[in-house]
Length: 403
Image (cartoon, rainbow, N blue to C red; front, side, top):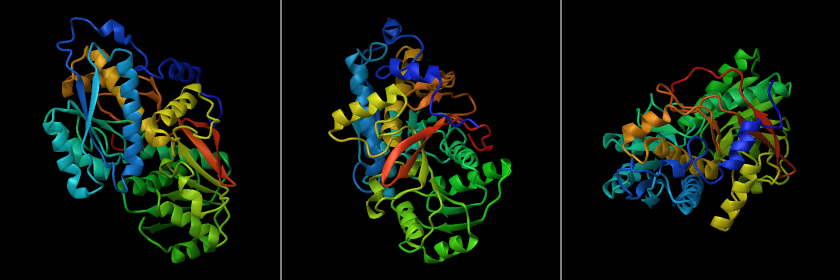
């Protein structure tokens, strides 16, 4: 078992040293040579949802990316080239996903950042690939990588196999023996969290008290809650995201189900708990703690800089970190290519990264895997309505999945 409050020295030092720059490898200044073919800005096209329901996810991703761009540009850019962001709001409309991507591509985007989800971001990534452009973004769904999208897509998230394995290992560390799975079937992300948890849990020798499904849009979960109570589990594993995840938690607690509830990183933060006063005994995996008690100085400092840049503290650790990490990743690739923004060239460079110390954690890609599978994740808890840091877990066994 590897639950711990301390983090590896490499990660702590790396984050502190690279809070602004691309993190690791040769310095930006050493690559600002004649090898760069042009000093024209590198254009990053953000094709996410900055209005509508997707704004909760994509808004902080964009803000985190903009913070990284401003800090990198203040240091002179990368390989003699500044970074520039253009954006097109897909308005959280599935019919606008592809047009938003095409718009930023038509306006000269060298790299595309789609919506943070496989179902809703995948089509935009595919449009970028058709034009030979790199796409980089975040999604838990394991198809949001080389196998599911193509060789020019890189995922900044660790994917649901890693999330689920981390959740299973944490549950084991708490001596939970009969969790009940509640699976939200509305997205690839929420579906696969439970599917991979079940695999990881069985690999650890665990058994389940039961399983059930619901839709994120469900306003009542009476039948599911009744079945949970009848099964007498010692924990509930909730594979969902707000608002449906919050609805499920409220229904469980209102029915007297007081056992621990464990959720994925999509449930990170306390913004959704207003309807559940003094919620306790809730845990979720995350990319850091926004409550000021994160043990990594680089992450604590990042959350402060993010609040200063946006005028408000982050509502979740996940999405600001994903945006910032995407730009760190792009900057590192540009260092390695000496400013060449060709999609295939950048992809080859990223495939060489090994335990690259980014704000999101040590990141490894390869020629066959464009998802940082197995990367350590953090665990936070909510007790009496307040979030606090629990520890870090590096999953010992991650279920096999598309990469």
